[in-house]
Length: 259
Image 1 (cartoon, helix red, strand yellow):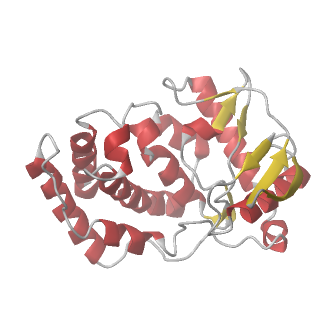
Image 2 (image 1 turned 135 degrees about the vertical axis):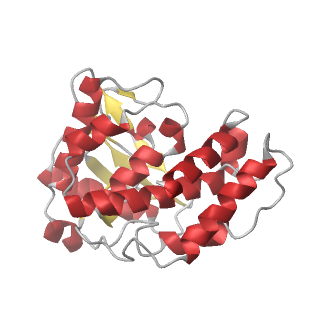
Image 3 (image 1 turned 30 degrees about the horizontal axis):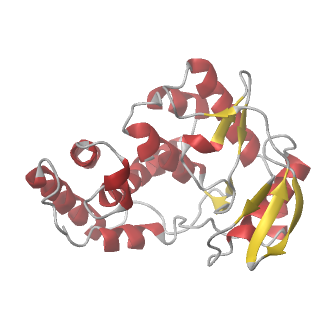
């Protein structure tokens, strides 16, 4: 299979090649095996093997699928950090050191909320999010417990073959914190809006340390705010999701910030 990149300004092809290469050595079978990379017709590409299975995300995950997903994450995180660094990979794209500032910038203004079903609710959530973002940070601006991360919480990048989960799409991969990655996964709009993940079951299976649990709770507030911004009128998430999704996210943000 050949993956041709339409954008590569943050080194997506190199990230993917390095991530797949280190996984092929230290967690074979978890991700596609890299075969060749180069440039064709002015665009970079990576050739890799195909994996069995169908993408998750069309319906709620079963308990068996949650366990298999957790096992896949543990295999991913078991890759030696020194081996990851030896490939040249550093922090994942939009990692802990930069994400808060990015979200703060996105949430700075309401924009035109006229397309929302309940503009007042969305405005209130944005005001609360700004106050939280402007308060002293409750999350570190660096990777605390470094692991190799796929850096994408979209369940469509997890393949299920009836027994095991495998992972695809490593163009943003790099080092991250398990707490950050779990927050990315459980707050991703593609699964949260549809209630596809049993979050408590997943958290129990992952078994984060107490310190990681504390960081994960704060990172969830951060990712939830990011998705609120993405679901505002004029942003991509607003067009891609059903009417009312922005209000759903606004309520979720208010609930997390209040908790």
